[in-house]
Length: 31
Image 1 (tube, one colour):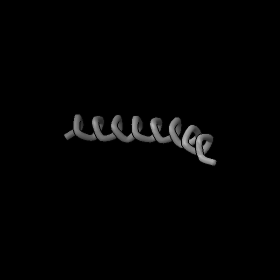
Image 2 (cartoon, helix red, strand yellow; image 1 turned 30 degrees about the vertical axis):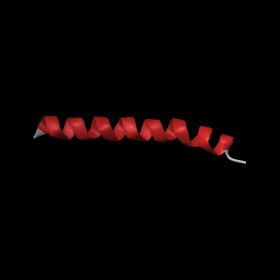
Image 3 (cartoon, rainbow, N blue to C red; image 1 turned 180 degrees about the vertical axis):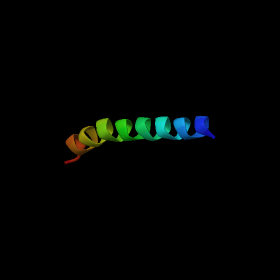
């Protein structure tokens, strides 16, 4: 149970970081 929670938090953190890095690049590339 605890490992599932840690895994979920890790996945969530990675997803947020990916979005945080990708969104500015996406906006910059948009006309």
